[in-house]
Image: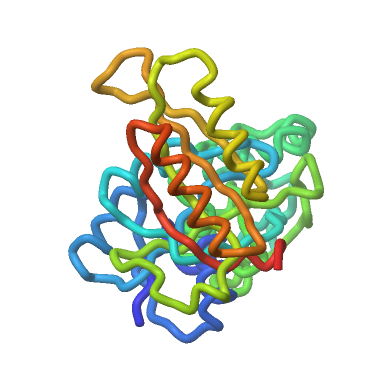
Length: 273
């Protein structure tokens, strides 16, 4: 089994792949989400791990569109706490550091620490890739912000632990595939959907009432513009349920009141189990 991740080994995507698949996989390292999608579409990988939202920064909206546009399925999800660490070439002290480099999201999440450190900030494409380059090129004036796994893999020394501004910092990742989840429907309790509504008054309220009537717990709703039709939106929805049959009845009723309903996946959410 091969799993595509955004970034390289030692990244947070790699951590999710290890935890979700119990380490039983090969890794395809992709330096962008577009490359990750290509790995699946071209059958280089069986599954992909994709960050979809963060408890601080919110939704990664382009990734919703990538899943939708390429006809991919969500077959699972995984949450991890994001604990950022400042790491350097072994033996280097913070006073020796001139630059702090990482992915823009990691830099944003460590804003307070970075402000106090008073170093030059350098944005990069991947947290773990910065760490790897520091070791390979013996860079002594740059510190990386990355996971503890990156420091273990590449031999960097952590000089400051858990430097994220908000300590309870969680990211949700989805597991995507070209194939839909064909598992036992008794073992699922969460669904990811997209629907498009007409411009009639109360159309969204009507959908929400249907979901409530069938005991569907709406955990996420994200509006995304439909590029081809200005000022019209599609809604990406996550919901949890206790009864799969009630879920199917609810979606049937929703489809009668919507221009389009698309199911990205039905899967198990351990937080709602």
